[in-house]
Image 1 (cartoon, rainbow, N blue to C red):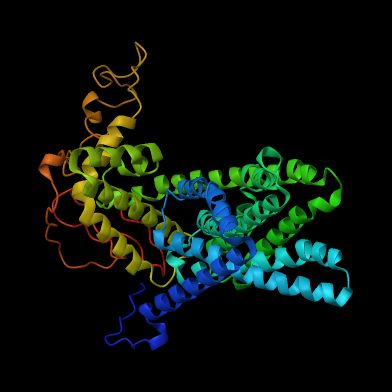
Image 2: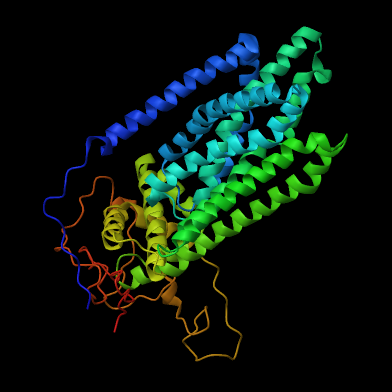
Length: 492
């Protein structure tokens, strides 16, 4: 039997550049300087009035796009700091890199070829896609490398890439709309016939998803790489690169659509962009549903070990039931309880994904430690979360179906049929067992600040434990050690 490797008693102290506050400080300083420089450059090109008009119009699609990506991330929501970093990187650092590199490359090509018009076309169709997609992909790469615990699959890659591209498109729209407003000021055009109105219609109304759609391909590549095992190093390196190349190709096709004739833009938009957007939307929603199915299939093992109540896997696998649980907690115990329920749902989801990776051999060396952290986090929030989840389970349970007359054993199908007694559905919908889970009390029996019950000493995750009662003591850690991944013990 595999044993747990000994923990180092005196771990080596990290170097000064490895400290968290140094990294956060350097990153914040970099983004702040980039933001100030990009602000000065855009204002210089558009003027103060044009900058303000462009800012007011460019901000309109941002809340909708952010809400859409946040909705996709509701199954296992990542920390807000990751989203803030991605948006800031796209709006500041990536935009600054794109402006400087695109301007330099276009000017160099125009000087070398003495053809300014050809240089603009080449810069838009070749240089800009390569530079911009690479600059945006850098944010996804940083989150993938340094926030690996928050980057576990395709949805995380889509959300990270999409939020980065939303920030980039925000800054780019300010520049384009500000320049269009300046052109209208010179020509005297206004209303629907103005350049500003046309630019707003094309960039904000018709194609607000353009930049997110390109960069999402890179995010999908990183997401599939996150699902690969540690043995497939070549695949983990090639998948993000393949996604980046696809993003560059789609971006180049979009930028070059104006060169395809009078109706080239509409042809590319209708025949290529819209179907690709629909296909990627379907893929992301399907992946989201698969994540919910993973929660429903992996968490019953922790029910058998006594960590979760019987109805919780099915309740946590329903976004509607999760929302009902949070609303119930907020209504009966306040915002703090609703926040605790949301955290309980997130930790349980992370636990399900962690167990799936361990079962498939993709767990890292910190599998047991991470599992213990998640189980402890669930245990300390159970008094607040379980009444809310119990209410959600009752509210979303399907109605009982009466049996057909003349079928079944008399007396054993009282009102429900199929071998379940009527009393079996009191509470969660599972029959009460001797020494099993007791009914959950309402919020009056818990309240805020209820101290966590005393727990026995830590039992390693790979030691089998008997099926415990839902008592006020902590169950043993149930999972298998990643060395051999034993299944969780069942009740004899």
